[in-house]
Length: 456
Image (cartoon, rainbow, N blue to C red; front, side, top):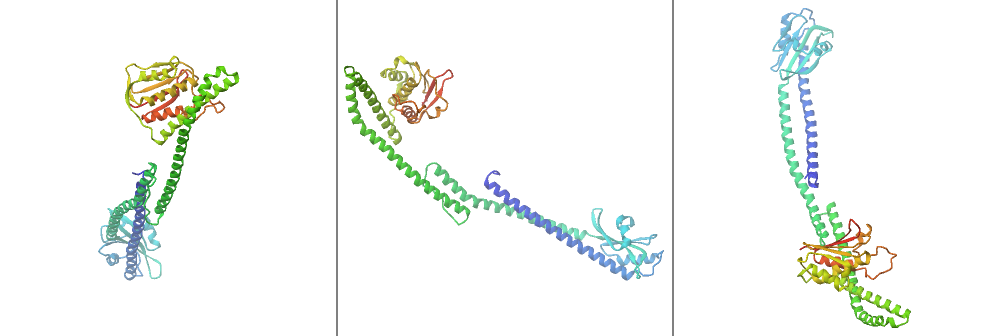
């Protein structure tokens, strides 16, 4: 989930809310704490200063009478304050604190004026104020006063504020989670619709479109997707139309050529039979014309077969046939029996279209005899895997990916031979019609290997 867009949106939104809440709460707490403590210490300092100004006589001399020390301490005492008064010799304390509880640094600075320090004593916060009392003439009197003011009430207020901020932060986190979920859903819903449409488009459903809702960036993306899909649908439609036209043209031309080629073949066969009685040049020409006419006829038949394959009109007539007998009949009728070694178990029977499988084996063996060296081995085993192996030099690595391409020539400079350049393509198409495939490779000891695999 974290690696997904929804997870990243969720985490980013919640993190942003947490960060902003923590900053606001932290800054607010610091400001409130400062204000509360400032108000408390100002109240103590002002009260201490005014009380000392009205209570302490301006003509005190050391040693200060104990009664005066007590009067000063009593005047400064409050319900939440304790006082320690000393003239350097005698000490009067009104509560639980003594002179030793006054911070050392605060005692040394008391001679310079009224100073304070916040301390924690026995787990309770206190504001300690200390000063050396000044006389009316501005000179210091032999009297030092320390006031311990409790900050327990302020601390309790701050604790309540902190608890309230914590609850508010927790509520903010819950709201952030809910809002992040709603935001992620609202953002990802159009993306899911776009993904479904793109998936349908990838499967070939060119009419897939996305509903455009709103005017935001996602709506712009949906609009662009629809425009691209419409353009793709138009382009693919045009290409399919052109492809269908080209296939129909090739099929029509091939069909129309069959009749004149049949007539030409009959005539050239007669000329070839009489070539021995014709002058040498004329006989050679007659034989060449007869051979090329037969090649042209084979090319037309292959083009018709390819056209049927491309148009999807080719079908299968399945039957249980003995594989070894089928292969033997294929090579025997074509005069290859002395050049082909068949290594197929005699009792192996397979279910396939005998005519189309005959085309597969015939094309593979013819290719092996044309480009390799005999004997050609045809090896079969259960599960319908047939290998056609020759003893030639093999297939170059750069040629292997293209051996099933139509009219492909490994060497463009090589003149056209007896083949049509469509045999392997037709063999692969017939294997695919059975739900199988043909793989091309090289044997470890040399020679090309074509493996036909058809599912049982």
